[in-house]
Image (cartoon, rainbow over all chains, first blue to last red; front, side, top):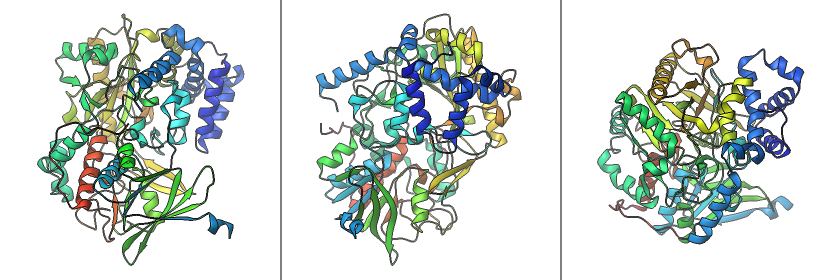
Length: 93
Length: 493
């Protein structure tokens, strides 16, 4: 995974973190901020569980982006569009 | 003065608080039975047109706290809860099990719930099953992720099967937990809630109920704050109140209303069905998100309290769940198309509690050694399952270097999806919050209809149990027998 977080993934991640309850929200913001910096990543690397959480958070944002999900065979827009079409065609709610 | 002008009062026969698995079912049955019903739901109505099939985006919109509700204890456990019309049925996997016979027998024996027999509940289950089009997933729709687990189970001679789900016209979008984009999942927000509305129930979203009103030992209604446009206060005057805010929030509402505390059990006895996931790197392309994520189970060890059920998701979901970091994480994600995933759920003996702190729930839950041992056994067998299916590598939810045999509570990476028991039913007022008919002990007209009344772990997904109990409650209030039917009940479009 590239450590650079594309904008769409970054926006999704920021919304996700914003939705967390306090005090978890502040902790997550700190983790994400650290994970986005080389020195921060080195620091997090000393604590396995926290490192995994931080890594997972950023990776979640990374693969939320269509540019990174499409090569893995996941096209969220197509799934959503098929859903909309089916609901319209069949009068689903 | 201005606040008073913003107040609104509604009269009804019944006020239902919460439009999830319990509340929506009770509301629809009562409204169709001729009662004047008001449903107050704290969360919003979700428009399926806005379901994006992107996990991060949908977590923030469909879940309480963005799906980041967490228990305090060792280990901390993520407890995602749905929010809105449909409650957690909006975001669950749709798996439906009837309450196991052994569990009902235990309820009769230990909690005095003698009326809750298999025979007595059969028409309730059948009615819900008809209403929600509950049927077994086909192997084709289950997808290749299920096929991997099936291959492993067959090689080992373990008992397995395809799960029964509340879905109609499912095409295997792979995102049940993030808002079904085809509305195939028959969650109560698109089934029972429209039925309630068609029967002239008033359904009000964005209504945060603050108190249940009781005078001289009898229900008088509820007070709510309206959130969103306009705001203001709402009072529903009703001689019957059904509290159905879910296992985490029902005890908080009852406690701040000064109700349900006589037994000392309110907010206690929290069971969760803690769960973890494991991944396998396969030679074949799995594309785990193509198909029904939770479509297959292995119940070989159900009698030991260990159940394996399918779980899967798009890359961003897997990226968060993979128990790896750094280059190993990146390498595994690069092979996403070859990854299989499966879940392990424990029927827990551990018990936790819920209480309010500054208006928010504080959930305490410590995993007892007996349950840690179940996870050790379960993880070992999960690895066995994947190896038997031909996995090249298996990634268990444990820190590097920790084998299942040596795992401690703090090593486990757990989630839980089935909170139960915080207002448990017990025929004896000194031992439970509600009785076998889900009436609050010591108060007339207040009932509870959600997972909080379920007095023990079920070992299986609880939504059907909650819906059946709500059906029984509604017909009890109507003074009628639940009709025997095995036919589909049409939902208004």
